[in-house]
Image (cartoon, rainbow, N blue to C red; front, side, top):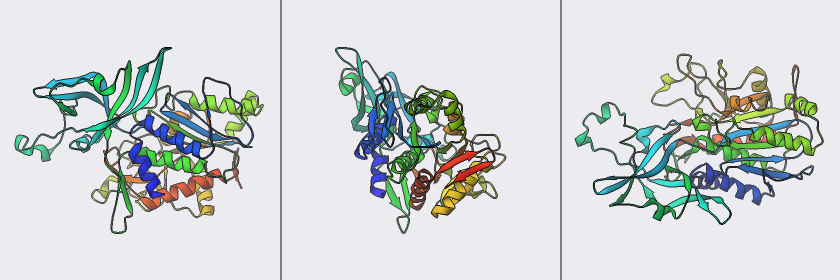
Length: 415
């Protein structure tokens, strides 16, 4: 499984390639593609998937009972190309970009970067979107220490002038590079090869570990033929910029899929609402592991470590959706499946990050828990996890999909 995970991380350069790879995986496992703008004919026991915008995807199995959902995100922090991006600087051409998501900016310097995303081509009848990955690399060069003696005293790059990837010697015509196009959504993304480290090869470092480990884990879970009931894996774009797009968790993709599944089962609106109240959502995004060099940045009593198993994430302010009931549900399921787990809270004097779970609940109000894998260097160009935690994640997600689960007014039925 390690090699397959490495390949998925390596080749899923942007959300568009992540969905393209997910479609190939699902098709190989017998899932049938559906068109959002066409009619759906769904059969009991059927396996299906639908995409939106080429960067979000929902896969599902038709069964009985409440829904069990796993939601993750396909995008990662990087640099996004603006329109008219080629900018000349003396003998060089550079790319005018802006930060996408909250990058650790210094980690993007002096790294191999590749251009990836989608290009919009003109056709005889309109416009067609095509995934794109450049056959060349670019890099953002640092200013030498001899010219910036204070560089190790503090690093604050100018986002307009310092972050521009070096494209070519002399003038460059991007249209010649990309081919004829009417537009694009392109990103300069890390092109580092995933690698293992540690004396036993126990660590995995790679670009896009946040959150493609969750995406790939959810795909492995929903492809498991031991799944029971209505199982859904939702992979959304735009989480790193707040999810407020049509293809993000704040869009209506999830609720529209739920309505169409309900319609295929002959359920009325009231019956669907009742079903949602008994359903269960896993918001799946990675968590911060205790840092070996800065352990004081962690909460005193909730300090997840790499190798410690799946992380259950909590926050009093609702940044994470976990409550006592939903945490208890997954603990019971994990106990029965022999899955290690641990807990994460931020220090009370630090601002918490958030993820797509709370936003998804504005579309479909479902009892929810936030889970993830403990990692280091979140939002760096290269991040790190323990491989044993990914194994635990897959085992835990499969256990959830294999469980007959129904949330009740005073708890949950788990069988």
